[in-house]
Image 1 (tube, rainbow, N blue to C red):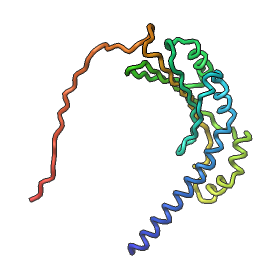
Image 2: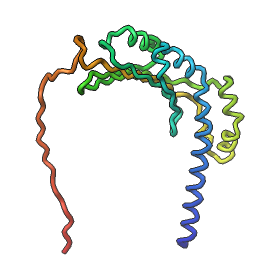
Image 3: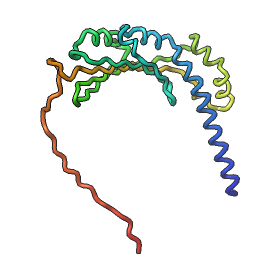
Image 4: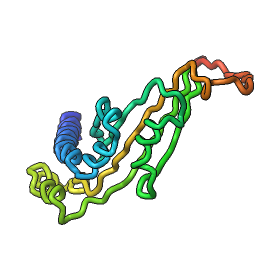
Length: 187
């Protein structure tokens, strides 16, 4: 096999991969129109919704909604509780992550996986889309979305001078790191 033939094959593979990615992204862009996305966004209280954002992932079937709540008196603030309430149900998987730096910060992340009902308007729109037909014709139909992974992230920041919630040092951990230094020696 000549170098040119191998290069030509690799070039064809790279072009096909790029085309598949473009068509798959076009279909994923439709996921933001799923009714669950609007419902989750609208479930945020008006104050949180005003600064909220919506992001469609580039390389998977997910859509994320995010909102930041700043200058809270504590993590029990009514505005935070109202913001979290719609997502505290069994259909959402909940996780939190604390950041104990200069200001108390807790991230709340709620995720749910929603299969696309084949009879839904969105699934029919996706199926009729030229990109879906292209993917099917080119043996890449597994890139056509069949579900939506919806995530709502609430970033809660408590005031640094809050009397009820603050960052305190509870211990000290010392670590000694021993790392080998290597180099190549040739005779």
